[in-house]
Length: 409
View 1 (cartoon, helix red, strand yellow):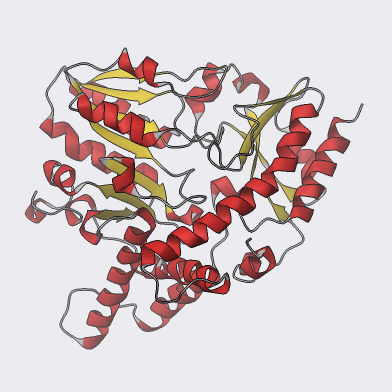
View 2 (cartoon, helix red, strand yellow):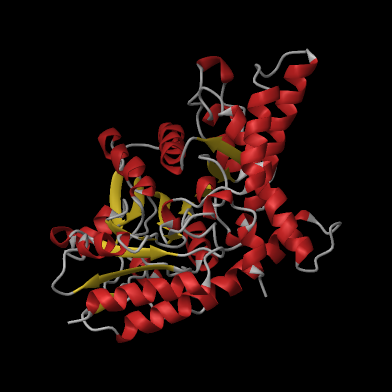
């Protein structure tokens, strides 16, 4: 069982009277991340690629950060593209792939995803790409494979979909979906931003051609990461300077390079995961994949316990409607919970809880099309409480008590 008190000692920003339930928008950074960013800026703030020792050391620190990002996805370093955000990386990927397609080719997007994995593909319509929409089922808030079947054709080039919606929290069966896409001869681009903070990602087991995540939601600095299957990355065209060429797997997707100090700080995520692993009885010499798996297994169990009383309360609360499943089963959802309250604008709830120093949020959370499909924009969207393993049972109790007071007649 995760020792939450021990975990919290690794996050300086948690030393606050506020109970932070806005974690799906960004986690607080782990202490080793902060220390590594500061150390890089203090000692290695020089250009990369030169022969002098300071530059060599700086380059090694940045490459170690890329290795840490690869570890989080179960990828190889030369399949790990870094950038400022998931939105930016998906845009670059779309720009790299579209020259390999022809007018009339098709891309399938969903109306459930964060716009990062929708808008970049929809904009290709201006270049002759046909966009088809895979719609979620409102009664379950899930994407169903049967509905995708009706959209796939011999012109389908790519299907973009979410591993786990950032408003619903329900986990999709990615291996099943990617296998069907692969049989259709198309590529898959999976948005794992809302999944990666809660579970270990293993891109090869998922069968994804492309997988994107935001590491500032996985206890790190503001860096996005894109996995690409090596052959798929090579297929894309260069979006960097012309002389970089098409033969690179990562650099051609990183115009302007990466933010050196932030990428160097990514090693701090590994430091934290390893500390969790060892503290909870793990072997320090175990393989990196085993250390990562152990840490995230502890996180997932802790989060299921934390979110269970919140979901139980919301299930029984008057006027409250939870989006998607109300099960706390770790196999089916992450602890990101969105709901509406009859008779209330979504903004009313966070405003009341602000007074209690409980941080939740309202809006569409860039899942604009999902909220639109549900007809909720006029009501301010949804209310979202998003937990991470470092939240405490007492914080959840405070959240429930404050919601109960808000809902009282």
